[in-house]
Image (tube, rainbow, N blue to C red; front, side, top):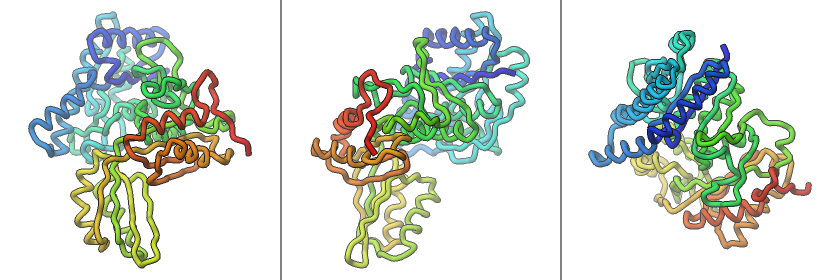
Length: 414
């Protein structure tokens, strides 16, 4: 059974004209002899609108009730798309995540997929239906509705593609593919023709909003190729796939900026074994993801520990701070919400020295101060002041030669 999984984001289905356009594109694939599974997000800004409604009721809505609320958006989309496909003379069936057997853990608003049943998919496909699934959602083993976090429809699509052993997973959005940086901010940004799972995972986790990071992890694990392309034209997109040798020729593939983090600094922490373990264990137990971490050693028997967390998890972090300060016997804590994280990513960094020097030098020339630094084999990230983020993105994009017609970044001499 030749299966193609297609995912359409909220901008691709934001009104009836675009829903009809999606229906036509899906039917085109069906006519080519494929069985088609479509994953759809909520219409346009529906999810944000629902979040706003909840905040008009309470500043601290229960996570379970938020899942009940937010999961309704996709149910509207799948039903309307099924109707549009029927109008074109083709069979289609719409399903919620729970109906097709997407089982998750019980972490409301940020659930992880545990398993997906193939039964209803196969039954519907064998009846020659185009199967339409609500993205972003599932159910627990206790039949509780859950959602998968921001961008969760990407994860739904990739996980279904893996489960059904699909030929490919196509992610449709309102841009032509993955760019070297945000083209709305840097007009010289180029579309990347091919990018590795690792590079895309880094870019997604660092603020690039094209795809959800967890979906890339799943695609990499199962070797499912992903194509990111526009739903508004027929232009070729960006292929996300296994790393190839020629990818190493590109020193830096992209620049990303994240403005959704908060820095927490515990100062006057006793400098002895086990303190950091205690601190981050408390955060982990509350499912709080910590990003950049730095410890400042001093000549005394005390130290300072700084770390960043995402803004949507900061309220839960705040509720723990007093307890953590007391438990680790710190002298105090400071909070800085005026930060951003700018990063450069590229598999070529492994074999080309001098990337850090180029990055730090470019920022220094613009008098952009670096607060924290984090590195991996294919990434360098700097925490800076938020009002410097756009300028930092622009200067780094130029410094690594990512603009223009060339499909490769400037190479550094060994």
